[in-house]
Image (tube, rainbow, N blue to C red; front, top):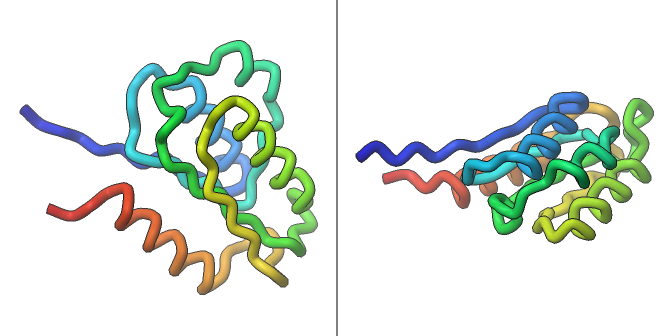
Length: 119
């Protein structure tokens, strides 16, 4: 039997889709990467959420200088998903705007290695 491990991820709007998908999927996934995103569809997520991925690791990285998706939105998103019972590993990147940084990339690699172990 083939055992597939799926990691969902996205940046900005893709991060919003990744988080919402993780919360509403009826299939278990290995992890979720949310980079510089937020949750614009709280009511829909609340209505359609499942418990399948409540223990699925979620990496949420955001820069404190993001002028596209304000840092406060990222914190509100973290708090919202935590209130629903999801486990979010929140990473704040000082001085980073709506982009990525070497520090975040290192953290992403460590996260991916943790949730998708090599055989």
